[in-house]
Length: 379
Image (cartoon, rainbow, N blue to C red):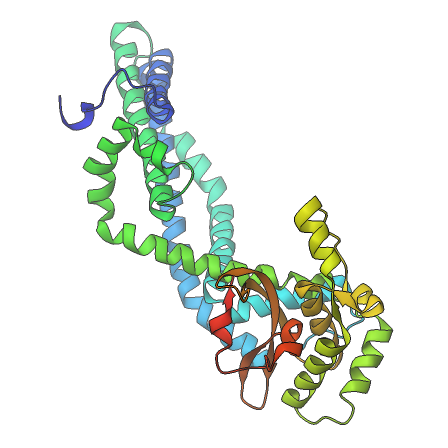
């Protein structure tokens, strides 16, 4: 057999079972409701589907139009970082607004979701009433008897096929996004899935979807990683007074962002000792001792993430725009391991520059020319 039925009926793949179950249950539901009930359900389903697709298209168009204007407005507004003693709400709001300003895909996604919610809210009542009134004539169709049950079964089976097709499209998207994902191989073992994907989804979507979707997902993942890293702006928002005083004392004779940023880099790099015991406790016993910048400042000990969080807190105390970066750092033995460092914005050049206070004692790691050779960002 070929086409839709070119799959082995003996296979026990769960994906195949679920797809068949969707069609079978829809068929049984159609027989139970009969021709009239199934026709009303089909009409309602189609109306809601059309409204949903329309809302998605309108939201995408609106997001494309609004996104650039929103960025311009945020740039003109000139977001100001809250003071170290500002409330959690202000710190969180600044982080979100800065993300909307700097991350185009994140900005598009937020605007898209807002537009979609508004459109569905406005059309929700209208859609329900239209579906209810429009489906009323179908009540005249026979629901009982052989003819009514047969018609209902046919309609139910058709709806089941559409539902199974939608699920296959979602699975197809997952496989395209995560070709090495934990479930991709199992999904593709389903003969029914392969046939539907090959005969319907892939021709409809075109080969570009399989190529562009992973690229888009990777870009979106990179932006989400950047937004996630900004959580330290909120977690460490309240900078203790002793850290503020120390940061201001260290930079009191410095002029310009670069001079201040370098002075803090040298201070953190030379005053904080690397905590080898903390690393051993984690590697040997699985114990992780979380510490905030104040604890690092008081004990003068920490690992890379502690260096980076303390540097960020001190930099914010003197009005520098800074962020914590995580990724992989060269281990000196030909490999890479988990690492954390910072990036600071220099108004003199209008650029973000990398620096690694943890490695400060081993050389110049403040915007060094080959910094990216030994530091690989998480995204």
